[in-house]
Length: 397
Image (cartoon, rainbow, N blue to C red; front, side):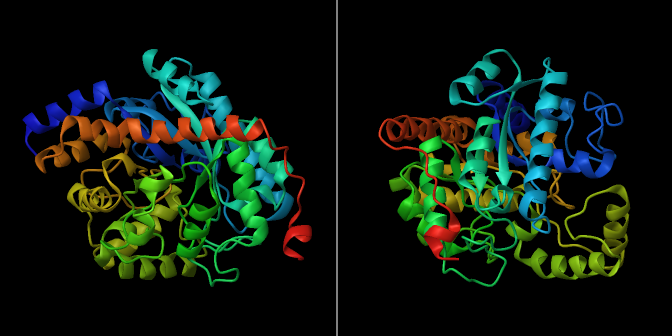
């Protein structure tokens, strides 16, 4: 990567910064510091334990970030709801504490206003339908607190939708799952189809009246992992208006990393650790495994291959970026943390992407989808009341 390309990339990002679809800093702060912003000063370099701090966000050209208010699928019922509320509380506290860097953004206009002020727009997305405990009232409460997307599942099925990484039960969305999508459309909450099964993707696209997004998924044709998006789904995005935000997670972008990660996950479980844990102790276990079993390394070029493919199948108006920083143990070479976005943009410049196309990738596409959901919600709220449906009523469960 030449200095000239990197300079051009940084110039692009000064004009149209990155609106990234997914960052797990809130859960990392819970796991490492119990949300204590005194214990982990995000205004200082935290590269020894996190992918994210404000200095590196600035260096990476990040102008807006969807913070994931994720809780693991092992939590369920009211426990999952409470933990999600704690995640929301942390994002709001972090934003309030650091107004020189962050501005809470609940609308597309507020994202633009934050950018005009030189601040990073802070949005929230809940990762997994277990966070609403099959309650549309809870869904509405999360929206009122500022959550602007719901990933319909995480790694396990929910009672009304199938996950990509679980055994199918519903064949996609149950009838109540369809009602969840309709209520999200009425609210203006984006339907996030990362983590869901391909059949759930297809059902959601059939039901949704608003643009959908994939907050952090890559192309299955390039890396055959169930977490990635098949071509027939990508091909539906132009009609829907949605966006697929390509992720950087090596096991989702590099075929050789899939098998290696399965072995690394088993090693983590053998040490009594969750495979997704990224605390210093967990990373020591991961690094020891990596030393004994060298890891296939993805690069910015690997990620660019997915971006090229999504652009080819779905079109330039339907591709974005969702790094998944602080939600993965390993990252590609050159994209080690949130300061790495200029490296990816430089790689795309090298491949012939125009600056206009890069502006759509980094900023305009995701913002258009957010604004599109708001427009649909305004129309639907004029003629549709909030749904009081329950899963027991709709699914007969």
